[in-house]
Image 1 (cartoon, rainbow, N blue to C red):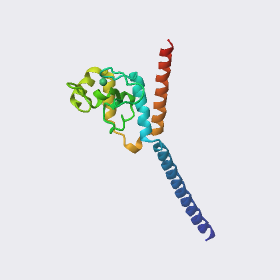
Image 2: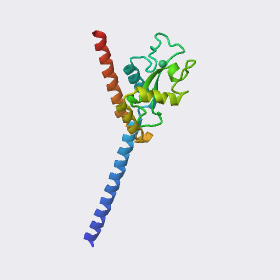
Image 3: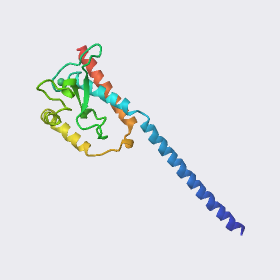
Image 4: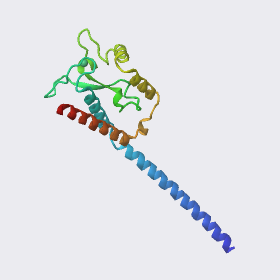
Length: 177
Ligand SMILES: [Zn+2]
């Protein structure tokens, strides 16, 4: 009788331990997911913009206009997403960005086009002017849907910061020449 009771207690104890382990595992998983989300989308997009601007040398990639210097006037340059930023697999991908002046981005000059007002003309320009390899990579990645909450923001932040540092170093070396 005593032995049987002890066995029963052991089994109960094991089940309890197992349940506690599951709870602990879930807590850890949720904490890890939360940590990944902690970095704001806004902060990541700001880093993404910086990489795109550095790569373009602060010039519009369509018409070559330099970014207005000094005090911010009404004309800005913008980093434009080639594939919509709603596609999370490409939202923070520097190669999915083009640095554009306000005219080429949104407010076309008379007789001209902009990425937002003339998406078909913009798409023609992209096909003609962007390397085939880059476009193929973007196309493939665009079809690999990532859910918003599954984006590893910490990893992306590290990648973007590394890209910024690399581009800044290159710029310094070029200026020193
Ligand atoms: Zn332009």
